[in-house]
Amino acid sequence: MAEDATAPVGNAELLTGSDQGARIDRPVFAISLACVVGASVPMILYPEAAAGVVDAIYGWIAEELGLFYQWATIFATGFLAWLAFSRHGAKVLGGVAKPEYGAVSWMGMLFCAGIGSGILYWSGVEWAAYVDQPPFGVAPESPEALEWAATYGIFHWGISAWCLYCLPTVAIAWPYYRYRLPYLRLSGSLTGLFGRGFSETPWGRLVDLCFILAMVGGTGTSLGLATPMLGAVAARLLGVEESFGLTLTIAGLCVLLFAGSVYMGLERGIRRLSNVNVALAGIFLGWVLITGPAIFALELGTSSIGLMLQEFVRMNTWTDPILETEFIEDWTVFYWAWWIAYGPFMGLFVTKISRGRTLRSVILGMIGFGTLGCTLFYVIWGNSVMWMDMNEGLGFLELVREGRPATAIATAVGAVAGGPMPLAVFLLLGLIFVATTYDSASYAIAASATSNLAPGTDPSRAHRVFWAFTLALLPVGLVVIDTMSAAKSATLVASLPLLGVLALMTASLLRSLREEE
Image 1 (cartoon, helix red, strand yellow):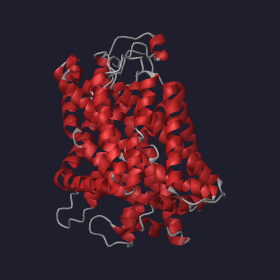
Image 2: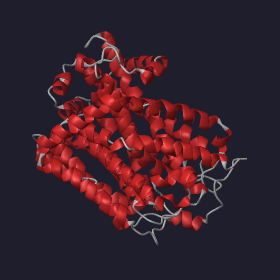
Image 3: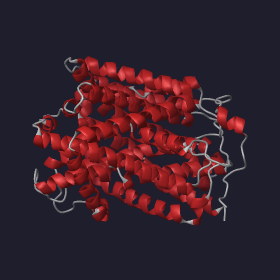
Image 4: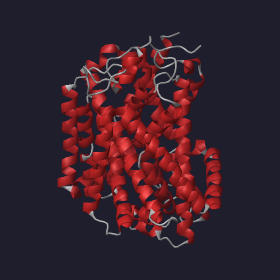
């Protein structure tokens, strides 16, 4: 029989999710707000100088510390494999007889929250970067480069990546339910090492502050890349020119959408939007497959999955010490940093929706379903875009080389059969993906800046909506700078402090689990 992490909690408390009694943690709130404004305003006022600074910081961290990101990813993968199939995997999060959310809603929420519009952006454009900059010293634009181009995106959004989401999830969820903590914060994951009162100490507050800054950097990168893409798609749909004003209008629409969703809460807002978007994603991918080069996409996808599985260990451990092509620094380190920056946020959010699930089901569900969903996007959408560029003169590669990836994606969506319908579905899909990511992020940050958040309660609505609007500041700055490297730099810089926290939370989780023996 599976073990329970806590005594039962009344169903009324669980279902209402009341925010009664939830109080803002003023020091964490004030410092977090100051850091967000301090990082965002200079980008908006001095975009050229800010771009130079963030690029320099990115280069130093990637070159000098990139290896630690790779080691962290390898460790997370191995540790979770052990935990899922150990006796601890049967332990239940919370004292309820069955999960609070059904499997479909649970998977939809975690996928939409963790992936968001980033999958729409990168699954279409990532292969183009690898054609010109392939790994392992392969000749650019060669057939072998195309094979790796179709493979590396699946790797970067696959098993290893989702392990970086899953490790913080189980490290946060277990002590939250096991010790019945009166707050839902990253610092709570260290309860096993430092005791129940750690979150109220200066060191605990510092850990929570690191999480909030990483969350702002990670989500800022997401919206900073997604907003120009959605603006370009909207311009093509409406038959107007792309413009900065249209991009800001899209950003404002996204903010209003996810502010409304986070105000409604998990049940009426995030869950419903996630269910709708999973259906929309299925419709879009199904239409692309039916009307597009299905055989090519599936054949290349099958080959890519096989190549990734065959070379999985090599891809995780390749550091490029001889050729020094900077492929690892430009892509793999960036991705691992992005997932690490998002990891605690996913941990807080998935903890909230995983009551009643075993550790094993959380681990296998997150890694399995997350990897499957991302792989479908790369196999169907990414490979179809590649085929259209090679066989229909789409001009996709040239647009990417000119530094116009958003326009390239809009061109590819516009080339899908069906007239304006694919553009409209893609735009709606992107808007809801942004909303589900940001309202989940707003919820997680508000929870971290709330001093008493027991199981079954939520941060106050006003607090959640405030962070929904505040989170838009950094993306606006990144849109003003208008470079992909700046967006990537925001993630890498923000994720750095979390490397040490990741090691501590793993040690804390192990100690907490052993207390049950």
